Image (cartoon, rainbow, N blue to C red; front, side, top):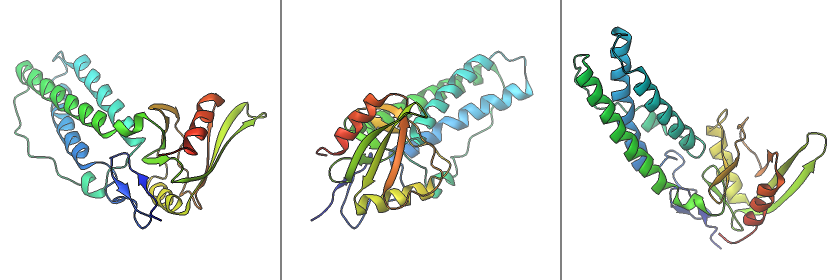
Length: 226
């Protein structure tokens, strides 16, 4: 029987394949990110050369917005080497005037809005069910799920055992993501952001949280239909 594991990008995989692990992030989303850094970098370079230009606060606001978006993306997907090494389109150097800085900031605003909208579209599936990074936790991928109270630590943890195909997929994902944070999402809300310390083997992992309620909900969803 084919085992369907749903990807956050909306793709499905059979028991022989789990999406394109070489390109984990949706291509459309990766492309939208390319247009954000160039105008922000141009503004930053001008401010380094001409500190009296009054655009520091405007730049900082957009940089924080970009960081929030990239953090949310990174908790789900990794950029492939192809994406990371992709050369941005050439940008003509402009004089460091307030008019040009304002134009660059507006360009960044358009790029940020496009990327945020693309991210919202790419994560529609994550607004229901339980997800660990790009892997949906449901009956097709999960063999066992239980929540345990750790009295000594004063917290709760969700224990998950995956079925073989999902276990192989998670091992491949976490092997690439060592050192990164992966989000546990329950009906669209991030309830925990554990750091990947190494590849997760044999499909067994634990996620802790201070509140057991969301983890109990995650366990119920993990044993339910996809």
